[in-house]
Amino acid sequence: MNALTFPILRLLADGQFHSGEALARDFGVTRATVWNALQAAEALGVQVFSVRGKGYRLPESMQFLAHDKVLAALAAGDSKTAPEITLQTHDQLDSTNSHLMRLAAEGAPHGLCAAAELQTGGRGRRGRTWMAGLGSGLTFSLLWRFDCGASGLSGLSLAVGVALARALQELGVPGAGLKWPNDVLHRQKKLAGVLIELQGDMDGPSAAVIGIGLNLHLPEALKNSIGQPVTDIASITNGVLDRSHVLGALLRHLIAVLREFERAGFAALREEWMALHAHQEQPVCMLMPDGSEVRGIASGVAPDGALLLAIGDGMQRFSTGEVSLRAA
Ligand code: BTN
Image (tube, rainbow, N blue to C red; front, top):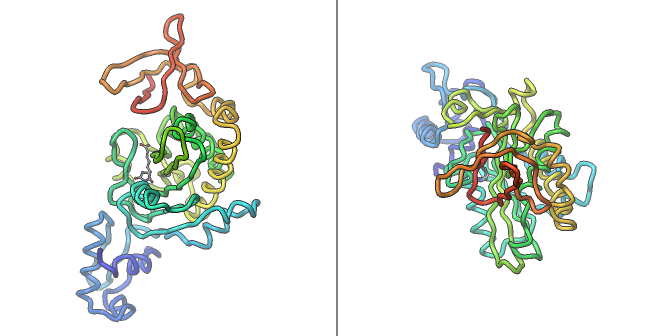
């Protein structure tokens, strides 16, 4: 990683032209060194325009995360929330989930949150990749340690969906729906995804790394390259929200929901989840790990978070895992 790349990108974040000469002067290096640092940015997939006589600029202005602003938004209205969280902000990580899974195995504390400006190997459910350009979304993970074992965490991913929907409502992003087990949709297009990975025994204690990717303002080219309909907050609200504020609000709601979950399990959040269910009473198709399909009418979720599918006269349960749901 080129040590100058992100410091220069921070200067370019205003979306204005900066001459190579001025950048070189600011950092006490040669223009060739600046050029190399920005080549390294391009290699990471960050588009940088270079115009002779004018210098370098990003396609548009962008916001880097500001640690203090995240913590301020996190603590808003609840002074008990902030102390439980330790926030790391990274310029670049392979994946915030992979990063926290490594740290968790080394004994990292409960409440550690890692956010990355850019992931080079972002991961989604079922082996998919998660794509988000620099500054165009939020990608972060939270390590949460539970006294119970992994067997007591059923419904956790659905609970996280409820937290995201609550946060979006607070942020003035109306109309979010939840797709089982934990995608956040807006008008049937994906707005956010959740990847939860567990460590520990079935009997406990256990640790969950809760990874969240939220689309804020995706470039059109990126939207079109993702193999499913996606949307972003900018398209819904016609405005750009402050990234740090959004991260703080998401974390605050996440923590509140995780505490509810610890106290009473998913059952306490089930009604709220059902009210947000994007496919309630609609025909859906479940893709099974062996490639087969099961069709039925989505009929809500059980208190343990299993999806209930009405098939003919019967009701079939599907637990989270490698099953995937599609509107039929
Ligand atoms: C999905 O919808 O398939 C889940 C997507 C989860 C993406 C987030 S981005 C932050 C965290 N780090 C990762 O590598 N993945 C999750």
